[in-house]
Length: 384
Image 1 (cartoon, rainbow, N blue to C red):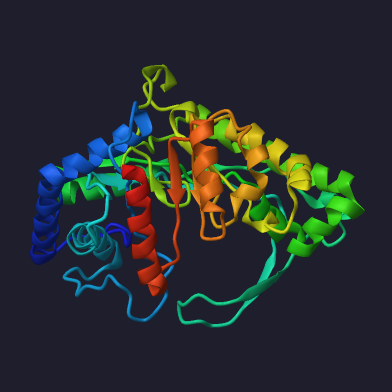
Image 2 (tube, rainbow, N blue to C red):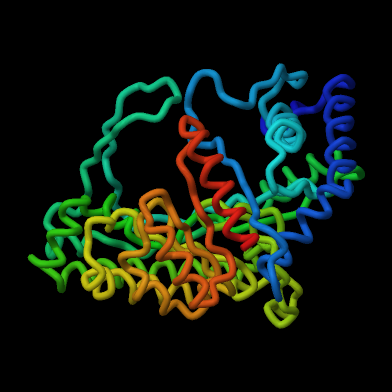
């Protein structure tokens, strides 16, 4: 019988390569330096007082041909090469970048989940950028909002349990005695809604509708919010919520290290949403004033944000202009302070509001001198 294409048999050389890499990752996870980083993250999020500023580096947005991380693969088939890539990446990150990311003694996996759609789809138009970032435009499906709202249909989420478990067993057979697998994280990035909204109706139309047709816009946002509540209910009922409170990427640039109280777990032992991090943001409404944001966006975001234990808010948008609204989230624990923010204002505001993890996000590698200057300044301010 032929091997499944997503679970190919490993040659002796491929298996030996993966197992050696897994040994090295496991050893890395138990080093004193790694333990210090883990303790520092927990001190930041659990309290009572942080030890030091935590520094993270990201390179995911770099789409240049000369990517920072490159390797000569030993494994041939892509599923094996993907495991090799993950293990080599963890080692490369610890050795070459050496930020405050924490190596973990397990191999993280996710459920194969389809969250469903609303029965309509945007038509995208973009060039062939050979894998690089580039511009695009799209034709939104809701061209006449009050009329086209009738086209929307409830989402029908689904999970491929058999495929997920088969893949997990395949990885376990390769390296599970060295790095056991763990299901981690949630099957979405944000519950901020407005990124989804602009693909349904268009960016300019979103902003103009706040004046021209506020009733239809509220109907659309209420529908989206209700569908996300449907998805969250389904994830909990199906036992598909997984922990994201260790070295899991949370928010728009942080790690999830925090202690989840025992009462946040369901009777079956799996996590509830109130024991996880959630992200909300609204980059698409950067040109909208705080009053309109409070009227049209915040009420729906709060309904969803309240489902989580800890909320990370923001991404690239300057949140200082709408801070008086954002601070009303009852579970706000971290906020993104992007290069477009008033840093001094946000520092004082976060301290007053008890936000323990203001995440200061800097420009990317091309501004490395500015980054170094800002990091030195923040460390100096922290010591004071």
